[in-house]
Image (tube, rainbow, N blue to C red; front, top):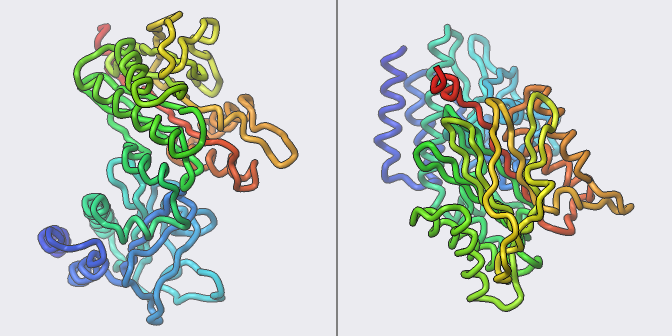
Length: 416
């Protein structure tokens, strides 16, 4: 069985080199069949991670095309939400208008597996496998991992994928920004980064960025004035100038000044607040500059322990060419600490009755999910949904959150 599993993976990898996104489901089914795997179904998450959408050309047992299913309240969605393999008695989840779906045949198991590229949740794989020991489930996990890598490798140049994961048209500023943003999740042995941004299809001036450079995690968040195409352009200039500066080796203060100059050169009277931060992942030493933005928060062991720089006067927003007040600041994290960066659209989100989401509710939401052991990416997905629900699905302003958890064990090793 192991040999057939190796042939499945090797054959699929070789066949997929020149395949388009639309061809992946048929290729997966073809190469999974000799290993005894059947009824393969590939779903990807929509942009807001509310639905799982089937890649085109797939059909159910009865021959009809597969429909999208909800991330919440389904077995496939549970695999996505919990980062785990889920076994089901049914070939697939119910979709709208159905009352029953086929049961799994005797002697077989129906598995739903998350499609993970690193820690990014791409979607889920549904597959029926023979009853057997851990080798069978391990091969299914390997298949899911390979499918995730193939989907991620083909999506940047696939307009059909871009249309598939959207539930409504995008504004021009949103189209530009989404193509510049890094993935919403990143993790290695030292840090876990998760980010979320709404309204996904009308985002104006919010943006986030992060990158790893050796032992340094670079993080930035921006909130440009306004909520239109000009705001989106301001945010893109801030991101571009910030990336250019750090890749030239400039320090945080100089990088913020470069963004200030870049925005002022392109616009009159426009500005962006923001935070630029560097985290030394060996030691947990955090350095940052605050340009007129809400201070980052530190969550430690289920409670907020610091609002960074809250007692100091933040430097002015970027784009106005004003004198600096505070400059570079520092803080020492402890292993397990979680940093929260956010824009005002999170805490100022208002219900139809005028009640703000508020800082206290925001912190409590994060702390509660952390205490429940929910992974950071799933916590942010639920937070974004809670903010949308608070405003009945209609945000008055962009709302962006980025979390960075330092979990390095290397600091203790350095002090031995």
